[in-house]
Image: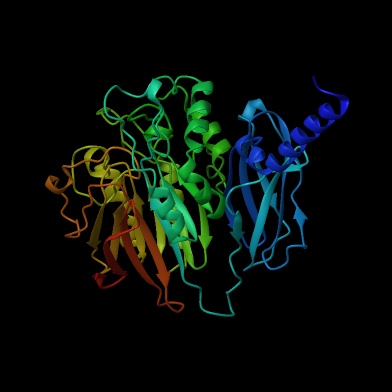
Length: 452
């Protein structure tokens, strides 16, 4: 029989145990559903994306890594069901070239993470120094298994440790090249289904440290837009666009008043142009469609003008399907949209635009293509795929007149682009790595001398 003293000791002991266990409890039962994820980072602003489990008031606190007492706070935001409880917190009291630590606060309580969370603002080098070297990781096709809704048989997604390898490589940016999630039959015909797919896949444990410490940018392709091979006739396209905006933190979404995922940004001295190959896309097999297009006239004209206006030594153009490949099968520009492909390449040549490299995905294998145009400038196309989805083993047998020998990869992989060297002499090196971070091949690219 317990005395009052016994009861006091028992209750006190339990309270002490709970108090001591609180940090672990906070991690395992976090009010965060997903995130945080670093989005677009500029010299004077950084975006941190997050998702809570229920409606909540959220903000981030951040400080220079070497000044832990100099804490600033973003404006508080309210998460709600209408946007799947997502929020984008803006750190707007930052200065160029500084590394910041940060933490998420939910309903006035800091969230404990089992890994560091940092972002770094780009330095102000213009008119002062040569541009700093930097690296960008890239890849496409991320399938995260969910047994009740997957096809029977062997799981289509695997080797998720690839994200641990990417994080260990410490890229300055990561650019996702589409099929970043795979909508299933239960997903693509409802807003709820799309939100649940993104919420499920964004929670992948191997992803979390990478999301929290590297700025992320994204385009979409068919599987994270709608059903397989979806085009502008997809009835849920408006919903897909809204959900893409909710789960990514690009600088903008659409150009010239249009919708879609088109945007652009500059990092150091390199210009990035992110294209939308789904929202405006004619049906692949529409033989009666005049001037059949993936990009639409307005987006194509915007790209033309943007390339002409760019002073960057390298212009990186991200789009879902292969541009240079001469393969007339699958969803390449050469197969269904050869006229638009010719228009893009002819405009690049006619304007004498130098340093263009397309980053493409979709194909479930990796290869580098290189073509020299009549102006003597090399145009490149790096296809980087897949990260975790199924692999296409027949790539070597496909026709591609511009393929660089020895660059086909038929296993899970990611690519790293490294820019370095003095102003106006910027070098570009590309390396492709396997899931464990072991290099598969490396090539150096030149604007005038091709691949080395």
